[in-house]
Length: 441
Image (cartoon, rainbow, N blue to C red; front, side):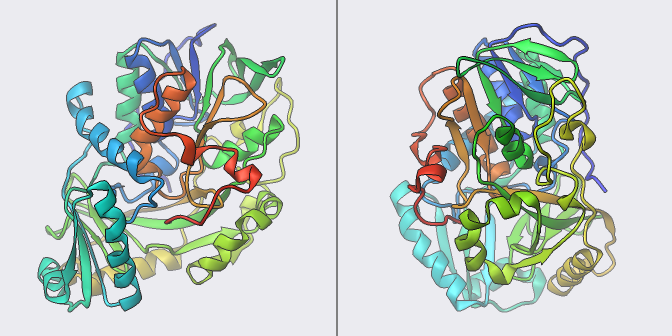
């Protein structure tokens, strides 16, 4: 089932021409539309289904700098600043709080990795501190556990997945953008290697600039236009409890991770536990992802399911723009959660926190975490198609980084000064072999 999410209205009329069309209204696309509209650009935000209904509302809600790949840290730092501004600028609570994030573990190797990351943190001035076993146990007193050690990322926090994308889309509309749900982008009008418009199921929009923030669907859209974007999606199951006693606002342990929501419920998940379905797209890019799969083999399960035949990684072929496309056939990507994974997650949470013993499950869901081969997003123009900016492959980091990714994509789309150096996020690294090591996930 889909998680509960704030719903917003669509604009009735599709504009005939705008400065920028944003395809995909998750956290990244909604943020990009917001920042563009704030600068006075005309913007149409397109969503094949419902604003924020896919991975942007199916995550933990963490907004963190802790344990980021060094390439992402400048963007993560700016994203945290942007999160803090939204409530005042838009006039709506987006749920962002700098609560701090607590990590606790009895795995010596994991603690050593956290300790090693402190060198990266010091380079960027990140406020984080290692916890002794006694300190970690004291900070998680409700668990009754003794820990070997941990980390407290003091200035990190959380936001509300049910609100973030819809509130940002609302903010974009307040600044003049139009929002079009149930309006799939079927493809691009291209003239002499440059974007001249977007073809939607409801008509065409003239534009010279497009941002594709389509999440797990981005690779298929690119492929239709002859653009190679290696992308793989892992399926994860998550639950939300009924209102529960006050525990920590955000806690990671190897057993499970918990995040307190605004209403007092908890989002609970098992970090890294995911299913990688065998799909035509997965086979196409298997060589690109092999180093990542080998590195994370213990955390992944492999399976064959409906995604082989339906969804963003299915065998699609080359569809016509004047007929129904694969995007219209799946308005919201809503895979069924694994019953066994949900049962295991709740069992682990109750074992970790006895106070959750009698707390029920309000809802559970599954979602697709779309990744690149090096687990770092692509936020970049794409060679061979002028006016096209790709912002996808967030690799499980998209929610917290979302405002920063959207801002950078907006900068690139209208040739403004980038909020951070865009070089680490260039699309070409995935094509020319210059991507470097696998990042954090």
